[in-house]
Amino acid sequence: MAQVTSAVATLDCAELETREVNRTLKQLVADGATEIRVRNPAGRHSLGVAIKANVKVVFEGPVGWYAAGMNYGPHVVVQGNCGWGLAECMMDGRVEVLGHAGSGTAASIRGGLVYVRGDTGARAGIAMKGGTLVVGGSVGYMTGFMMQKGSIVVCGDAADGIGDSMYEGTIYVGGSVASFGADAEVAELASEDHAFLTQTLAQFDTDASAFDFTKVRSGRRLWNFSTKEPELWTSAL
Amino acid sequence: MCGIVGIFYKGEGSTGPVGQVMTDMCDQLFRRGPDSAGVALYGSPLQDGLVVRVDLERPDLETAADEVVTAAGELTAVKDWNLTSRSLRLIVASDDDGKLADWIEERVRGARVFSVGRAMEIVKDLGMACDINQRYGLGLFQGSHGIGHTRMATESRVDIAHSHPFWARPFPDIAVVHNGQITNYHKLRRRLEQKGHRFATENDSEVIAVYIADRLEGGESLDGALRASVEDLDGTFAYLISTANGIGLARDQFATKPLLYAENDEMVVLASEEISIRAIFEDPNLVPKELQAKEVRWWLK
Image (cartoon, rainbow over all chains, first blue to last red; front, side, top):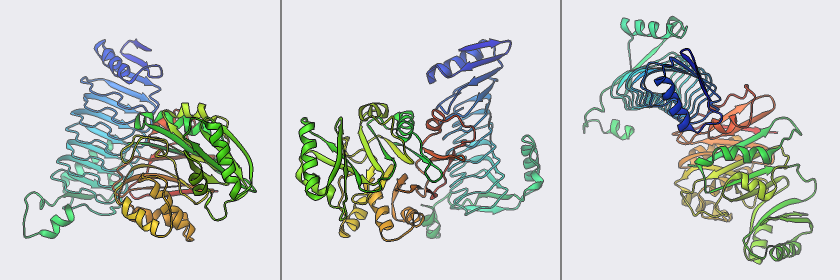
């Protein structure tokens, strides 16, 4: 089942209940493992959650919904796809998905970095309160919906409604934008934006200068209700 | 929350163990819908005649089966029949005016016609899909494509008749499985009833099947019907529609309900969650991907 060899441990999910997998992960961390390789995740839900430690966890296959949620510190790698709600409410840490991700990726994260090499479903970065989300492919409907802080970098295309009702934060899109969401507006890229993109994408062997990024931010017109702009509110609601 | 699954074997004449695959995939999604499960399976199309699946809600199953066979025989020739648990399978010569289902139900107490088609057979029941597989002997069913469903009831009662898939009565070989809620159900149903269609249940998902079948009957392509449905259906939905030739799907404008597709040279696999695909198929080339909002796709022979 679980085996610790020096600081690298292996854990096979095949015969374990989800709670047993997560309990064993925490026990391995407590026993001093610095890297845990998890075999046969087989798209199961809620794996690798609520870990508060500086440990590397590698899932050798796809994971299901709500993977790596509520974490504080670990570096999680998924060698496959993941389902909805990846890294939900993560406080800090790093999550890398080498396949595609479902909807609600990096929902409400407060810090850390989430990277998806492929595409994401709808509402990636919904209600982000900090941290960075990097998507190597394209993003789905209403990405960055109601985000409050942090950055989203999309190398591919964005579907309809990007940045809808965002309070704050920044979204960069390297490909095309199908349509902007309510109160999302395009801004000029400053030198610090270019520096951030170069530094962020370099971690994933991606040259930021190969893209012509569109910067999306909040128009801040939904911050306060105004009777002078009824159309804005009608369209936003 | 419900689970939907589908499989389509590519290429003319290619088939696979659809009965086993669909029920296995449904079982992986039982947490999404523990109330009931069901499948619409497409075997070899009959060259001459139709296969009819009738559910018998009667303690005296043999008598009920005899009554159905007699009733059907008044309208068309019954070539063969057999009873497995409470599912009666009939082979009949024809149903040219689409009245056979109503005819049987009006004459035999407790009989509900679940499907009529040259290839399609709908089997559904309460509980887990693996139990339904055992009960109705679906493990050996070979076919070209199929869809399946595990239900968590939200819109209508928990019984066999309100389980998915729903047949697009009276159109042969068309069925739907749906995850979500159709909020303009009554309006759509009234509109279709005014055109002469009859509904067998109070379930909102049934309206999708009849809506698509009605459009196909009117000469529209499956692609056109699916695209129109995204505009006309209100509410949340990810659904699969199966016809004699293949499978189509659509997702609502807010992408509220999950649906993945994975494709390799031999097949297309569809499921609400990847766990359902990974548990059955080992091919690393079957890489599931989530469909986007308003996306429609179809695969036909």
